[in-house]
Image (cartoon, rainbow, N blue to C red; front, side, top):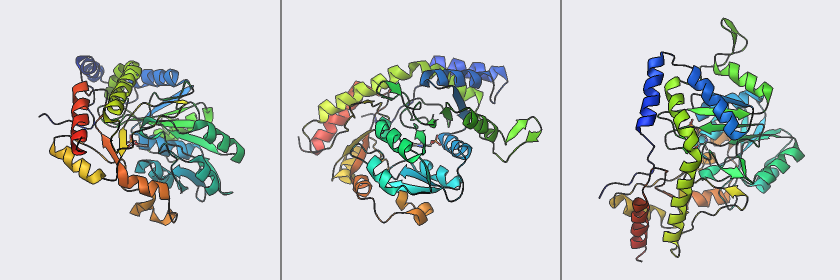
Amino acid sequence: MNPIPLSRPPVDDEIKRAVLAAIDSRQYILGPQCRLLEGELARATGVPHALLTSSGTAALWLTLRSLGVKAGDEVLVPSHTAFPTVEAICLADATPVFVDTDEFYTLDPVDAEAKATPRTVGVVPVHLYGQPVDLAAIEDLASRLGLWVLEDCAQANGATWNGRRVGSFGRAAVFSFYPSKNLPAMGDGGAILTDDDEVAARCLRLRDHGRIDKNVHAEVGFNLRYNELQAAALRVLLPRLDAMNDRRRALAARYAEGLAGLPLVLPAERASARHVYHLFVVRTSRRDDLAAFLKRHGIQTGIHYPVPTHRQPAVERFAPPSLPRTERLVEEILTLPLSAGHEDAEIDRVVATVREYFGD
Ligand SMILES: Cc1ncc(COP(=O)(O)O)c(C=O)c1O
């Protein structure tokens, strides 16, 4: 039996040709491929500015700095996210204020409001697993409390809320092109999308050592630029994003049908959202045992994430006493294999193996 990986990134001749052409161009950093891709990303998302960065984490840090956060500022963030979301807030000198999840595993707007203080300046909702947060509630909260919204779209490229793409709701948004993401590069990569001219201009200079002219550095930034080889590959894949997301949705529906009736909590979709299934996450109190069983049958699984960020040693000093829903969730979640590159037969094999585990 061939092993079934958690994710299978696309590789084909069209991508290889694009990368080879970028190699031949002898322009490797922020050249024409990057510029074209920035325009294409901005148009696809429906916002005026897109800036490529060396990773999603870099995009988060650049945007937070550009929003002007400073020591003492508090930023609302779900604990149930990838560590980089929280890390970037800390690196920008602000204080992460951890918020519990709602029933869709994303930031709970009610808990966010309860945690807001006069020092709160913004909120970073994360469209986790490919599902948009409750954007209506987040927009309402932000406008009532005067907060900026920075959408973390790392896991939800192409997802929509009431038919509009995520990344176009907040003051700014960040994306990741990590190889397992919905729009994958062959290495690290990220992007900032914003309709705010000042945020865009500041991100632009911070991305390149705070440079405003060839030899003039207006502030201390860093090197967080992007490269032509990855941009060339992403330009081939961006027009396929919607089709790749359709494929993810079709495989998720196949799982939902195949796993129905088992003692598993399956992912639920919000009514206003188009979920793009970056990850297919189920819940069971027998998680570790089921994962071990699947591993013995050559099926890779994951846990996103086993340790909530508010329990990470690096940020312990900011931890709230307890986030009960998050703490329970992390004991039960299991990610099953899913990507646009998986075959129907692979999903069927995972379904059959899970059914076998439950004695079905
Ligand atoms: C929700 C979320 N935010 C931010 C990041 C950081 O992106 P990157 O790995 O490109 O730095 C990731 C990916 O790991 C993520 O899943």
